[in-house]
Length: 290
Image (tube, rainbow, N blue to C red; front, side, top):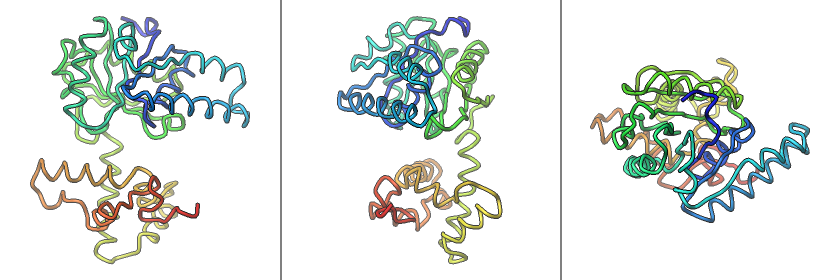
């Protein structure tokens, strides 16, 4: 298969990431089917799409014609077979649980035509852990978008040992067709590129806070003004979700048994209180009046 043969894309998972990935690809000219087993999720995704497109038109970012075209290119289906059976590329964006993803890839492998590429948006699990549940490991890779996909340009394309060069070339080309700037990661590594660098920043910022070297507001100010970052590490953690970050640390600690991999106390305390960041109105910062 060549890049030009990619006409239909299936996005599995209609959450915040999946619905935006579907929109990005529809705006890029692809026919997209957004799938989710929950009808409510699809309803919310469709409502979001209509609202988002209308907002872009109102702000002059999209023409009414372009918005109508994109809207018409997205279909919604609860039936995975209907959504994926004629797809040229499937992008999985479901819950970050390995066994659930593995079962999904096994199902997709049985449903999709032999030429279909199966990509995972996961930032936690390398595609080799999913490819093993298919009969097409050469057509499996990671296609990691950043939140929010409608805004963030970067996509990390990660190949596993069996991913073919054809698969890499097609996925990179699809990213560019949709206005993204992909990077290729030639070997699997935990955290890929961006999250490994962010992890180092979070770890050091939490160490400074936990040991009373500086307040988190001052650490954020220093990073923004001294390193010219648009957001400080604690602001960014609040945006990502402290539950997600804490879960990743717990997972890492279970794998290694190394005390250094335990969640830092300021992170764990907020997680246990239910202060998970912007999504709950409070994390390191209070967003209830914003």
